[in-house]
Structures are given as structure tokens and as C-alpha cells.
Image (cartoon, rainbow, N blue to C red):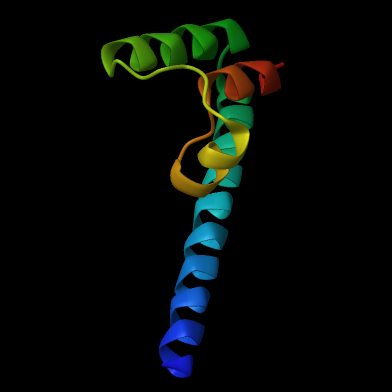
Length: 81
């Protein structure tokens, strides 16, 4: 039983780390996209994608960090220069 609990905790920790890494990559991709085109174009595209996917633009920060592979729309828009 103890081993199963340890394995489960490692799985949860690795999932969290992969989610955080994926979110970091999304921010990096956004920054790179602004070097190729205007930041306003990226903002418009992100808003359209969220609208088409019927995604809610805001989420609790802790829930988002744990479960979402992409950062919330509001955070992404704020990070675009």
C-alpha cells in the first residue's frame, strides 16, 4: 500500500510538472509569434480561437495551473507586448 501511494504521488507530481512546462512553452510560443507579426494580430487570433472553442477566458489560477495545458486567455493576452 505504501508503495502504491508513493507511485501515485510521483505520478501527480510529474503531471503537474508537465502541465507547467507546457504552459511555459505556450508563453514562449506567444513571444516568438510577436517577433514574426504584430502582437495585436496574435491577440485577435487567440480571442477568436477561444470564442470558437467556447472556452471561458478566466479560471482560478490554481485550477488552471493543475489541469489546463494552456494558460488562461487573460494571462496570455497580458503577456503579449
